[in-house]
Structure formats: C-alpha cells, structure tokens
Amino acid sequence: MNQDILTFVLLSWVSSLYISLFLISILQYRVVTLFREYWHLLIVIIFVYTASYATITSFYTLNIAFFGKIPSPVGGKSIPGILGLLLASSLIWTLTYIVSFILNDAKSKEAIKYMFRNPFMASLLILDLIFLFRIFVSTEDSVYAPSPHGDVTVVYSDLSIAMSSVIIALVSYPIFILYKRIPKNQIFKHIYTPLMIIAIMIFLQLIVGETTIILSTKLRLSLYPVMNLIYLFTSIFGVGYYYKELINAYKIYTSSVTSLEKEKYVKHIDKQPSVISGRILLKIDPEVSYHPMLKEWIDALSKDQKVVLVTSPISPFARSSFENEDNIIRIFTVTVGMMSHSGNTIPITNLSLVANTIVNLAMKNRDSVIVFDNFIDIVTINGVKDVYTFLKQLAEILAENTIIVVLNWKALSEKEYALLSSLFNKIYTTSQGKIVRIKDDF
Image (tube, rainbow, N blue to C red):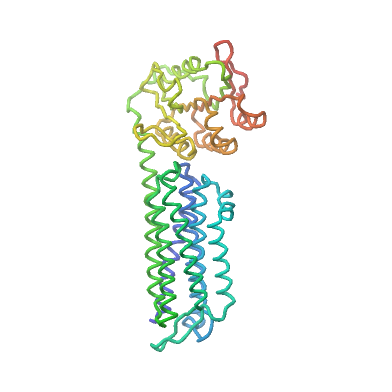
C-alpha cells in the first residue's frame, strides 16, 4: 500500500469523525439555552476542520479512484499543497473571528465588521488574501520539484515564504488579545483555558506548516506527511479539549445552582387551583413600592410549591423573609460579573446562563413558579429584541409553569412595551396598595 492510499484511509477516518462531531454540535446548539456563545465558537472551529478535511478527502478519493495515486508531475501545481494553505488561511480567519466575537460581546455581525475596522486584524486578513492570490497565479509556488531521494516535493518562492512569515508574526496579535482580554470578560472567562489552547494550537500548526515549506524548498526534504500528522493530532486534541471543558462548565453551573434547593417533602392537602397562573406581567410605577403587594403573592404561591425568585442583590427581596422560606429559591442577577462568595449569583449579561439555570430548577420542581423582580434591568442591559427571544423561549420550554415578570413599563417606549407585553396572557398593575388585573385572555 503506497503513501497516497495510507493518507486517503487516514483522511477518510478523520473526515468522518469531524462530520459526526459537527452534526452533533449543531443539534446540541439548537436545543441548549446555556452557554450558546461557547457552542457558537465550537461550531465555527469544527466547521473549518470539517470542510477542509472533507474537501481534501474528496480530492484523494477521485484521484485514487481514477489514477490509483495523486498525480505529481514536476513543475505542476500541487492541489494538496493549495488545499493545505487554504486550511491554514481558514484557521487565521477563524482565530481573528473568535477574538472579534469576544470583544464585541458575542455579536456575530459586529464581530465581522470589527475584523476589518481593527487595523492590525485588517492588515493580517488583507495580506493573507494577497498571499493566497499569489499562490494561485504564481508558477513558482506550490509546484512539484524533484528531491535528492528520487521522489518529488512541493516548493515555494522566497517572496511567498517571506510573506507567510510576516502573516504568522501578525497572528501573534489576536493571540495576545485573547490572553489579555478573556480573563476580564464576564461571558467567556469560564473557557479561558480551552480558548487559549485553540489559539496556541492554530499558531503551532502555522509554524509547523511554515517550517515544512522552508525545509522542502531549501533542502528538498518532503516532510509534509509529518506535518499532516501534527495537524491531525493537534486539531483533534484542541477541539476535543474544548468540547470536554464546555460540558464540564455546563455541569458546574447547573449543579451549583440546583444544589441550593433544600430537599423537603411538601404536602399537597386540599390544594386549590391558584388564580395566579399562566404568563403574568406586573406593570409597576417606579415611584410606588410594589414589594409588599408582590410579597403577598409569593407567600400565597409558596405554600404548596417552589418559587424561583430572580432578583437583584440590592432588591428588598434579597433581605426579605417569606412565610414559607424553605420553598423560596433566590437567584441573584448582577451586572458586575460572578460573585465568588455566592453560588446562586449569575451575570445578567449572559441570558443563556440565566435561562438554563431557571429551566434546570423548573424541571427539577415541576410545579414551581418563576418570578422576575424588576425585569427592566435585564431589558436595559441586553436589549428588547434579545430579551423578547429569551422570554419567548423560556415560555415555550416552561409552558406548564407560572411565570411572573415585574416590569417598569414607563422606562420603555410604546413599541417596546407592546412587543414584550404580547408574550403575556395576563397583565396586572398596582393601584391603591393592591394588584389589579387589567388583562386576562382566559
């Protein structure tokens, strides 16, 4: 069995692995509510390797089927060499996108724009495009040349080698940004290690590729099989480690909050159907205290079911004592990041984390009630459209649970309020010290 057939067999296995992992990640991304930003980056990384290995495998399949080997005439263009450079270029663009995605608070469109607004990133990407164009049109680059051992190798011109060296030097910039900025980013700091491993892995692969090109060109030593093996094993390690850490992060955060619940048997004797049910919006006036009135609701609801109270650490509910305290599960949302001393505190900027925390608690307590205290904090920080999607998905997943949202409606425009209020089948407001119903679809 010659080298081309061995390479083909290895590529086939690797392509199958990446295609399977890509499909699994897509399916998981569509259903998860926790760490969607992390899954997004994982899918981008896996897609690059999947597309690259699948393309190279297809090329080997066609050539081995028709010729029994990869044609390598002296002076002819090396298609595997060009495909390898396209993979390296894709990795550079992927790394740049990852950095931009993190710097722009996980907003894809803004990240793509930032890639070309940042002078260092723009210089890197433009130079990379010029390099690829030269490789395609030049008769001196990615061509087969005879080696002293009687076979052939792929060589490049001095100018192309110099350009690729400059590109690799510029790649150190996004890696440095990752190193400096991730620990301070409240959304992505929890996957600092796997992201840095991915960045270092890409940089290592680029250096190995550059070294292989130089040795093949100057010494006529064909070290491309060794390079391919390094690419293969480092990519599998990097992607696998990221995937494992993502699953671990999911377990840590879901268990840290759900473990707060005190296991206690609650008797359901003569339980009457509560009129406080469904998707409820409580409109409040910021100049009128609503906490005593809402506390009466929570006391009534918590007699025979769990109440998940999502509130701020500075809210009166953070210090209030309820009649059925054992049935109250407090979740504190903060704008300044995670509080290490409090396991039930989550960042308000990470809606997927907030959603998944609530879903896990509600799934564990089937009859639980979800209460969002002063929901305007979440709306103001995340934007109306994102919060609308967040609420809609939460209502669809927890269709059997009662969800109560307390909203300072005066802080919204008429259009914004109309959009959010359309998600509720019951709307209440406060009047003369009481909670009064103003809409009921049932």
